Figure 1 (cartoon, rainbow, N blue to C red):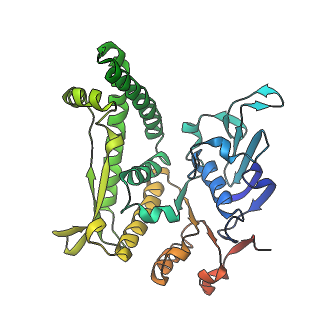
Figure 2: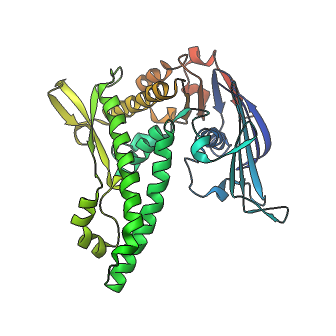
Figure 3: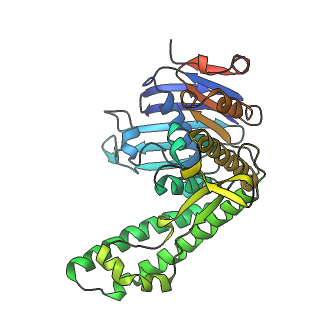
Length: 350
């Protein structure tokens, strides 16, 4: 249970505190700071932003640092972001604390479990494979320390390996010794990522679907020494690593009358069916988090009600009461009246 958040020099907040209930509605026009507050919750939950990869963008303009503090029923969580210098003294760019004790991000995440549903998620099925990989990363990084460690190692190794491939392409010469360490790292970390992604997809496919009958087909780009050797010439020519989980994708197939008759939702589903499939993915993410952490995550809904019809909105509100929910909207009118009565409201329209 998230009880409160205090923000200092974070985005549009110079100094402000917010309290939360079982269900909290944040109301206000665009640019009023609703998504900034949601971003703060997500940062305190995962140790990263869902909007930017550049931490400096989250520090209020003209300030040296930002501080985010969350109090839950169990722990006090804190994130400090800096520009590298505080009071003319060098400092860490990012610091995580649990009950006042410094932690690495891999050990910080999972203390405050959350599942985010934002307008960008409505394109998971129809947009680029990177969105689907990001979804898998969000599901697994939130609950699995080994996955977080493997993903960090893999991203670093791929970056270094691609730089070596680019250099080899320019020079026309490959030195196998240069690649040995990074090959070992991409293989070991990549295989962990593939294994755990497959486990989540198996969980999803076995799950009883209460919103949309569907299964996931995992298009895995497995990585091994044999596959790296197989594509060695092509990789030098391209200057990038061509195999591994950074090339993964998945498709969602809906049942058409029976489990033996399925169609790819991306190509054969209506827009409504595609959104039902995404809702089912998010509900599965909640249940996966519950199973792995033995705790129910906060369900964060960021300004999605203007994007959904009444039927979809009612499906979402069926989840309210089952866990803590934080949601934002530009207009209270998007929220059913029966639901409004049970919500704590943070009003940015005043």
